[in-house]
Image (cartoon, rainbow, N blue to C red; front, side, top):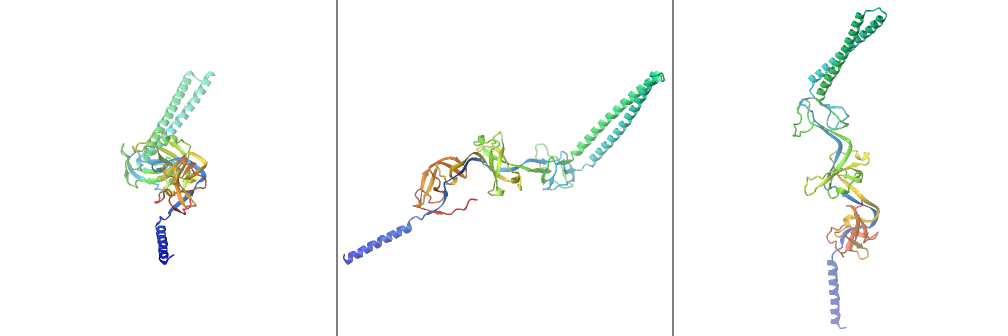
Length: 386
């Protein structure tokens, strides 16, 4: 080989090497992806609320006085725990209190007069019986006996009349008590005072018909809590009372609580014409789960309609439209699309009937740029599931 040919050969080899180097440097870099494994586990078919639900108390009373007046007593404050029958709020009622005491005194007087009349009736009756026995022995005249019997009947009638006045007096006491009770708000159940609207000395008036006003006392029973959540009308027919559910609250992060459906509303809400819903109520299974929870929290529910304990499953986030997934090839470090047949599904897991085998690696970061069929990829670590 001549010197010229050798030079041409070397230059050709160098050119090819340069082109190969440039091609290698400019080739697409592997796409960083997150992988998950096809596994066997529990899969559920669930229904979730379409809009945020609300944590509510089983009993809540917004109390207001039935008459107007000046606040004379306000023994409770916001946050106080109260018992059934405890006075929460009182309007000035000295005049009604005096009337109640007067009615009570009249009742005592009526009872005393009735006792006196009945004692006299008893004495008259015994006297009439004594004279009747003496007349049989010829020791008393008919006139004296008739007079004694008549007197006994008159006294007996007086006794009954006096007893009737007791009932009248008792009714007066009840009327006075009812008038007095109208000036007081008492707790209808054990609970916590959520709100107090009013101060000592202020004048309050009852709410006019058709015009809502803030309650004087807002009382909540925090011992019984449940979640009300709107479910799409399409999903509602499958939900029944007693079904298992999960409850999550924004205030408690990703923590879930076991629940049970307690009621499905018998009507559809059409507040939003294009998204009609049915309210579903879910109660907590464990009483201790309700500790430190406050009515009004934002809450979501997930009602379990069906479940398989041992099913081939993948994370639902790995599923593409048309029931396809990206499968990772460990040898070529590439991904390829695979068609699958799915079964039960929820936001977390989807059952795979055909198309995948246990242990295969699939892509869950399907929304990243460059994640396409045949792409070179580079798996990266993912955060551990909590």
